[in-house]
Image (cartoon, rainbow, N blue to C red):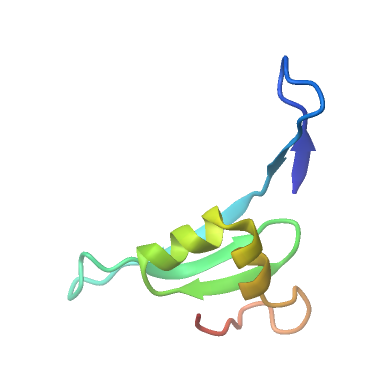
Length: 81
């Protein structure tokens, strides 16, 4: 997470989280959006099975915090939502 103060707005800070997203596509289900999201710098990973779940994980900071697994342990293993 990065924090910075926007230009011209004193006393206000914005938080930036950086993510890496791996999207899985299927010829049988071309409209399906699924994959793995990782918050960079923390090693926390979550599997998402719909675009709606992805938006919740990225858009809702607290939801992401609650749904992330620890950066320790098996780096490639994630539990579904």
